[in-house]
Amino acid sequence: TNTPIVAQICARLDGLPLAIELAAARIKMLSPAAILQQLCQGSLQLLSGRSQTLPSRQQTLRGAIAWSYNLLTEQEQLLLNRLAIFVGSRPLEAILPVINPDEQLSLDLLDGLSSLVDKSLLSQQEGPDGEPNFLMLRTIHAYAREQLATSADEALIRRQHARFYLALAEEGGAALQGPEQGQWLARLAWAHDNLRAALDWATDAGEAELVARFGQALWRFWDARGHHREGRRWLEWLVGPAGSLDPTATPASLAQARALVVAGHLAYRQSDFAVARTYYEAGRAQLEQLDADLDVGLVLHNLGLLHHKQGDLHQARSVYASSLARLRASGAEAGVANVLNSLGNLAWMQGDLASARDYYRQSSEHYRRLGNKQNEAMVFNNLGAIAMSEEDYPTAAEIFQRCLTIHEELDNKNGTSLALSNLAEVALEQGDLGAAQRYLAEALAQKQALGHREGVAILLETAGRLALGKAQFNRCATLFGAAEELRAQLAAPRPDVVQRLCESAWNQARARLGAEPFAVAWATGRTLSEPEMIALALGDGSQR
Image (cartoon, rainbow, N blue to C red; front, side, top):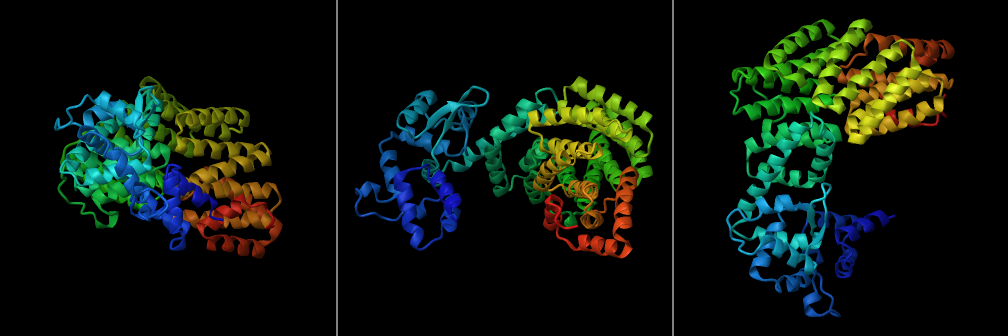
């Protein structure tokens, strides 16, 4: 059915009867999907078909809009054109500094905005902060954008727009590590379309330094909201694909050296560990050339995480120690807290629960002092993992539920998916297979959407243990084979504690199936595509 596409077409046309009529006239030549694709490109050309039953000014949508546009004063036309630089929201706080840098607008801006609202070319609503925000119908926006594109001042207005949103991003990026992180995540989400437009212009204009600064400012927002692919696309425009990097290159600037590290962060989050290492090492080399000790301390922590993730625990501890020394010397409290948390994870993996608790306590104290609820919740999560190790499942469930609540309040998709994954583990250990399956399904959907392939592998292992609990032994073996294949692709071995848990489960399945059927099922799992692996984990267990 084309119903969803038709609904999107109507939404793109703001529900305007004339626009819908003109679009419908194209159905003889174009499919609904093709019509929608052209509308999404922002052009009014598609709607230039004529209806002989209408007045001449209404025979094309552009003509209808032009008729209204020509009733405006020159100053109102200029104001409308420049307002088209915004995408989606037009907060008053942005309008005032963006649209009149050359003082060509002599009218009072508030009076001009009010006039455009009265003439139904703008609408007004409250923004999330209670301040005035102005909206423009997409069809009006497309027309005004065309007018702006033909003017001599387009480049000036686009640059001014990019500068405003860069300043907003940098203010928000700093605030995301403190007590206002929830408000700023929401504010940046509301500004997201304009941030994208600013980055579009910066890349089109070859403004490498602006793109680098946007990347440094926005990576925590991209990470929290799961926009890793988007962030990587912008940064790869700047720094190039990992395979093309020259490790001996002279850094163009501190911002561009930092952009390499941000590209590494985003690759790491998507379990693209080899690419992450390449970016981190290149960033480290450039930062060392710039004597940026604090930044070198931060990237050392990230390299330690890679060693940790890939099972080289001795090297991870050594790199963490180097990172911690630099960050303490630089007074970087947030960075110190991050390394202490990682040292806690390392101690937990090695079975030293007392040291792990102590590292987590120190890390939590730093985060609490900074007001960083998001990262404090991540430490709570790790304390929940210790409770799981001690088979204190009620305490673990309480901790993970608390983490879930915090991450949902912040709309932090990374944290939410992790909490759901852990709640699935607790439910499984407590024998509540129904709850385990529900949490597993939610977590898998989020991990898949985020592109967290290692997280998917972990959940395939949970699904394998869940299948064992349901006496679905063949399915259990297939799921563990799938997880093994995914981990091999990622070069992400299981931590020892997880390895023991998984081995216990698949050995039980092997004992029930027999060695040969188990091996066949395991091998089948290794041949599945990732979507097939996920579908198997979410299935009803009809395969046994």
